[in-house]
Image: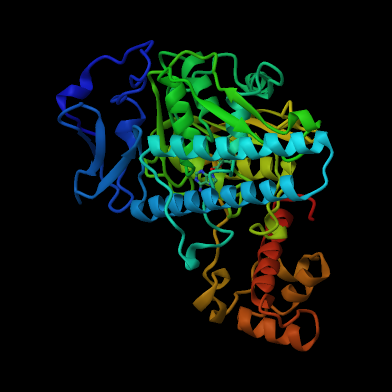
Amino acid sequence: MSTGPEAHSDPTPVPEQGTDPSPLDLEGPWSLLRCPRCQSGLTAVLAPDTGELAELSCERCSRGYPVHLGIPLVTARPQEWRERWEHGLGRFADWMIRAEKELQVAFFDEELSDRSQNRLRQVIGALGRHREEVLALMSRGGLTAKAASDKQVGTAGYSPETYFNHILRDYGWQSEVDEVSASWARLRQVLPADFQPGTTLVLGAGTGRLAWQLATEFAPSASVLALDVNPLPFIVTRLLMAGEAVELTELPAHPKRSSLVAQTRRLQCALPPAPRLSFLLADGLEPPVAPGKWDTVVAPWFVDEVPTDAAVVPGLARSLLREGGAFICVGPLLYDNAHTKPFVRYCADEFVDLVKRAGFEVTAGKYEAESYMASPLSSHTRMEHVLYLHARKVSSLRVVPPEVPPYLKPGPGASLPIPVPPGLHETQFSPEQVAAVAALVDGSRNVRQIVKILIDRGVLVNDGTAESAARGCLKIMLKQLREAAAGQPQG
Ligand SMILES: C[S@@+](CC[C@H](N)C(=O)[O-])C[C@H]1O[C@@H](n2cnc3c(N)ncnc32)[C@H](O)[C@@H]1O
């Protein structure tokens, strides 16, 4: 990425309040950003008056990518993302005002004990503070609340409340409940003794607290890019790194006592500013960065969050890493039923297999219970098993992904005849659905014809899933044939 001459000034190690602690890290991840439209490099456009980063511009197609408080938004449709955030902010503000009014009515109308009245008084005040704080922080990132149209009112939209507790956990609770240091200590246990992250991409970085830790612990060699789709946590971290005071009000969903229904905290972080930590608003599933160049890719509490098959994440990490690069994956495997189908809700052991299959050598792993989001104000927390994994990308020659034959590809593939594979008649297949499909492979039938026969026989149900079920059975059949040929036990 080329930049103007102003950008070459040395980063200030300990910034004065309000100065930018992480200007352009030209040798690091910034140079690896790519235009999501044409994959060309991006050029920094600096504001002539302040010398601050104003925009990123594509070197080839000249498309511009906006910058929010020093954080570029690099996606094919930045304006849509902005609108989603601003409409989400509008919905949040409306909701907070409504909630405040309802409580005010209850405060005056209902027969409440002194203690309950006091609780309501605290919540009413805190709702207003919380709303104002969030709106003010978002406006620091150039984002203002907009009225949501009917079309945009829905559950799928953005809310600044999503992952809000991550900000409090990372910068608010630490003097009482320090999950951050505990998690970092566990992660250190799986990192090799000589670990150096080098040029690092953190996918789904949240506040960027872990990215900050990596950039600080391994300074000056580490150069870290924290990527997320959610602006508010990044805005908070940017302000804290710039030495600004940030206050946030917490309203726990399940307070321990009526005196703990709300608390305004001054956020802080013990880490020094990290000049080689940068932030990027972008889609982590299609990161706008150069492939094959990263020394380390970190996926913290990410793989089960994305509305896709978690198996894509190790594959994605592999494509981003240089040979020998490290994939660090941390998190529980807690899938959202709404967007993850049962057959891809991998348990931790399955996920480790997926990482190996994607072309990694798993060097260390831990999978233990830990507490999650234990707010000092809350009566409720959860325990979850968390996987900490360090893996190294191995030579592509050692990875032989099974080739998907054309007749197994959805669409036109379903009308191609399925050849009889060697060993078909000598092999016993299981479970019985696989055996039923294998028995119909005769060299001329295709997937569609096999599906029809099996629906007629009542082996498959005609509910729109039969074809993919038959393809799945054929894949298992081929896997069992490979295992039989290699003399491995089947199943
Ligand atoms: C459970 S949080 C974990 C945050 C942080 N890594 C941590 O450990 O505290 C999941 C994060 O993934 C982010 N995320 C979800 N989908 C994403 C996507 N497609 N691209 C980038 N980030 C995403 C969310 O915004 C959120 O910050």
